[in-house]
Image 1 (cartoon, rainbow, N blue to C red):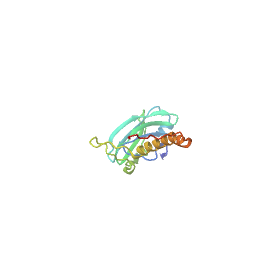
Image 2 (image 1 turned 90 degrees about the vertical axis):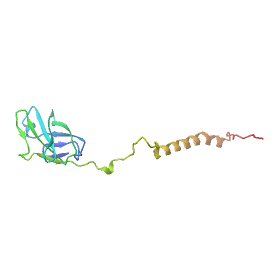
Image 3 (image 1 turned 90 degrees about the horizontal axis):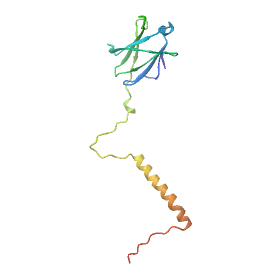
Image 4 (image 1 turned 180 degrees about the vertical axis):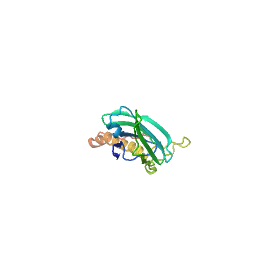
Length: 154
């Protein structure tokens, strides 16, 4: 996904507590820089400030960044010669979204309760048993070779 000219992420949305791959093909890449670093932080105050050396590829400079649960991801780039790409002193800033909790399965994983089998697993066992009985006993019933056990309690 292209978020701004010459900056790409490998995802549609920046989600808190996930790793994102960022690709940069801006002025430093076009100027044949040998090394490019991403200078980044989170939130309005650029918390957890960090610099990471990006890997040079044919597609630009790339790095993987672990996003935290702040509201925004802020960054800029610089090369080995001290040249900066900071979006004309505006820096690059993107909103980080929270993981939608409606999509997260909440299960009680406590050890004090009895383990319960899932309904789908129980139904699959019942269906397998029914199919086994049909395959085993139906041909005997049709051919007449099925003998019923008789109790002789006389």
